[in-house]
Image (cartoon, rainbow, N blue to C red; front, side, top):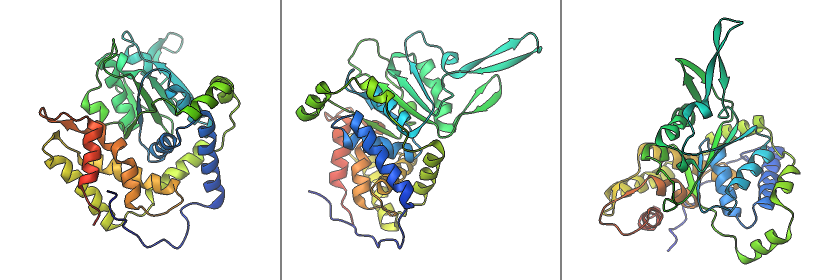
Length: 323
């Protein structure tokens, strides 16, 4: 049963000026023209980006994970790099290296592919844990340190990582510490019959991506992120988020529940959802629409549980009422 609606008092002014709001709407529409039949997942990807998080897409090969990343970069005019993770990939291959310049008599840092505004970490769980962990500082601090020198990454900085299901050969499970760095995890799944028919009849996705025109630029993306931070979350809504956190820590089938950092991620993602709906305030539906994507990969089931992480997150959502 859907929890009762908590109706806030509408703010006196819209969250964005009309031109920027219209550009954001066009950006979502354009990505939906490339990634067919996945409007809910596209909206979640935009919410993750605008909330300042990083996105993990876990699904089978061939369902559009890479296409979504390419379409986001082209639509938002972000510099783009794709890193294909393999078992022999080294941390220096993604971060960069310091090379001794004989003419200058000193070491000079040569940035790796991580120095882009949108980085596609493709099949991240095919790399060794050592290489996976090289992303931790970058994702958390938007910087990397090489030979004791800190190098800032470009802004905005957004990592889209793809992951194959763990039952496929040649995978290394991501540690919980790295999973927690991803604000949101989603699956694209197979398209429905109508979307798949349109996909089969349309042009090649690579041709469509090459034809995309930017709807926003990096400066506007940063402006949107600032607007997300200003979206109102009422005390009652914060109580609701906190109740979800507490329920995750006391549930009999969950060994480790949601941390305060997970609560902040949930609140920020809900603010971004509100902004995407044209509101300057959050409602419980914003939290509910994002909760499974933000919470499920952070939950660690108890040994006696026979439910998946997604099922446990959905059970928490049904268990906690809106007061």
